[in-house]
Image (cartoon, rainbow, N blue to C red; front, side):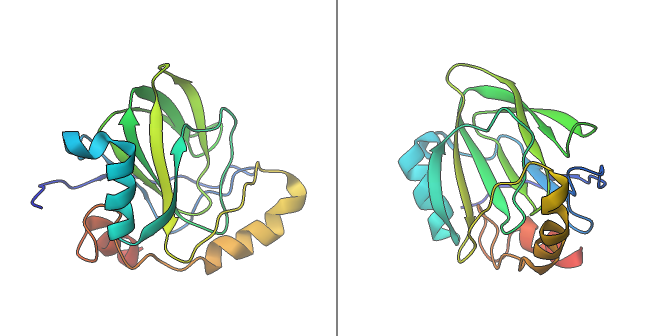
Length: 172
C-alpha cells in the first residue's frame, strides 16, 4: 500500500482538569482511508493487521473524557463530526469519513456535534486496555502516573512499523 501522507500534529497543555499528554502529539491523518476501508469490518481488519486491537464501532462520547492507560485510534468510516481535543480550552477539529486520528494517552476528546451517520472504528495498541476518566480531581494523581507509563505502540495503525506515528512518537 502506498499512501503519501504526513499527519498533522496537535499538542495540548494540561488544562488542570484534562492532563493531555506532555510529550506526544495527537496525529490527524486526513482522508487517508481508501473507499473499501470505510466498511467497518474491513477497517477493523486493517487496524488489527497493524497491531491495533480491541476494535469497536460506534461514535465519540458527548462529554470531555480521556484514557490514561491506553493510546487510541479513531478511524472515521461514516459521516462527519466536530471533535474537541485537549479539554474545554482545546481545539475543535472537523473530521469526516476517511480520516484517522491517533490520540495519545491522556488527551481529552469530546463530540461537539456530528452528522446522524457519524461512525468510527476505534482501537488500541495490542496489549493496552483503556480506562474512562473525565477529569475529576481524585483521579488525577493515578492518571498522571498511568499516562507516563503507557508504552509507545510498536506500529502505526495504518502504516505498520514504518509509519509516521512510530517515528513521531519515538521522537517525543
